[in-house]
Image (tube, rainbow, N blue to C red; front, side, top):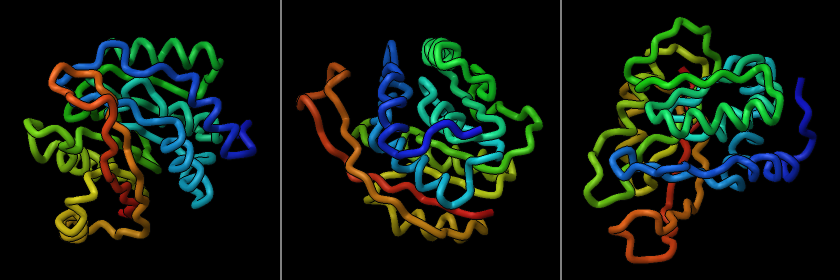
Length: 209
């Protein structure tokens, strides 16, 4: 049952979720700010994609989308991430909030195939904000999401790749219904960062399968 009635209340709840405890540059780990997560989750809830639904958060990190969806009344909210440090922290938050409709799984999303009946997928994959980042990681997440056969997908990407992504989604028989736009703050957490913070333009594509 949903126990959040205002977007601001959801944002405040999500602010209590810690950032990645040991961010790993190879995984391009950046924590989604609560203001962005709460806005996207609230929109998804308004579109009927969360309440009483089975939701999976691929590459969940410390669980902000999985936990947020649970707070908004998801029937079951599952977070999957390869990083055990993040998963352990997500489990601690889940227990602290006493959420019994959340489950976290420590596994590479490529190997995730647990047979759940999925309605909605959220994913904030490595979207290539680093110069040396391996390209195409976000498309691997899209491919996995399609394999899970949900009704709806919400996926973060670099805004600069929007035209390419629209073509890719359409060629994958995905119907894009909404594109949400955000300024995603990248903090100075890795040695190669030269600025205290840099805002990156990202988009979140909502697509129906």
